[in-house]
Image (cartoon, rainbow, N blue to C red; front, side, top):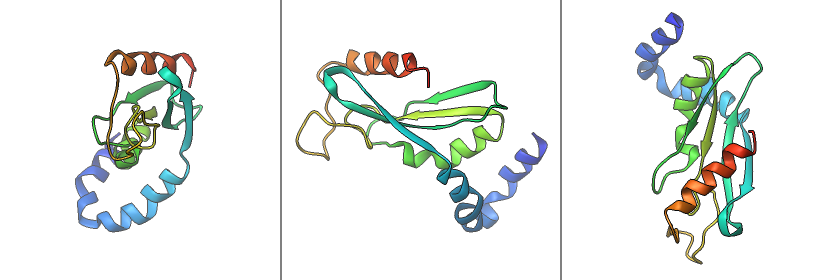
Length: 125
């Protein structure tokens, strides 16, 4: 824990080296997957897992966000002993869209997000 905290305190001084080295190496180890959500919309997610972790964190980014923006957060939390799961909601990031315009997110009912998350959790990732 203390080494990780020290890394946080000094990382900004050499961020380019961190991003091109350890962070890139970590991101390459991700597992990308998808499940079919409400209305047959594919919902994408990424995970970082190891047998030595016994805790997990699910990150649900907001509008116009994708899991690709969360590499550094995933890195830090994973190295604190958590398995990490980050979901791209329907209409966001790399998940499927209802509309033909890929730059517009849309959901018919807010509860579709809830049901998608329940389906994600039920897959036992």
